[in-house]
Length: 306
Image 1 (spheres, rainbow, N blue to C red):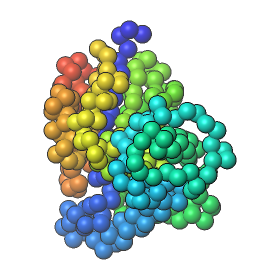
Image 2 (image 1 turned 180 degrees about the vertical axis):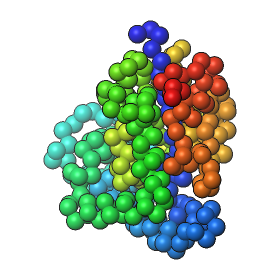
Image 3 (image 1 turned 90 degrees about the vertical axis):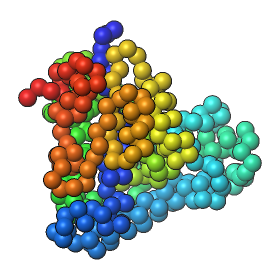
């Protein structure tokens, strides 16, 4: 449809969809003025850090790509796709292919191969990577964290589902290719995009561990580590923009706020404080729709209806 509305929701990760830094430095507990056990939060954060790094290294080439070889972080997995010749990688030995500096076309192809494997593993999910014992540990840690944070993780995930559906009932939608969802009721399209200041591989692993991978496709995960959030926002606009596309950025930091202002997009600032409505639980689809309507001047009937 020529008049089909597309809503693109651009999310920050840390201290927005997930909590990690604020657990490690105690700022999450401090916001509760003594009602939260700060040390428990630090211990939970350290367990997440351990799992994120271990899985990044063991299954997603992180140590090889980003720690041993400098300047190999890319802003998104498709960044080197033009160097991928489509070679069958089923018997490819990534430990013996001589991947190293300098960053010439040959080594860019080797990095593109690794990105292809990472994308496939992301699509398959952690249940096809981890053994049952590790799955049980991961599940227990997720539940512990969600309980400690009063449902922050599950609430954020529920809002992502509602944003994709364009409705507070996330079952009223059809998933289509590329992590895009079309609402059955209106025909509008809804897309979740992640722009994080962290490096790309650990950020993809975070999506998997925090159960966001079926709500944000690997093509829609961007790392602003090297290029900044404004550049990522500009790429996203170029990728999705048409006259009926609307963008909204959601995050806790100054950089995404300034980038959204530069793009003339609405920005929702997430606030850790327990009395805030712009946190999880608290932030609602109705509030997101309100921000859309202010900037784009036409109330979103999907998001604003009672």
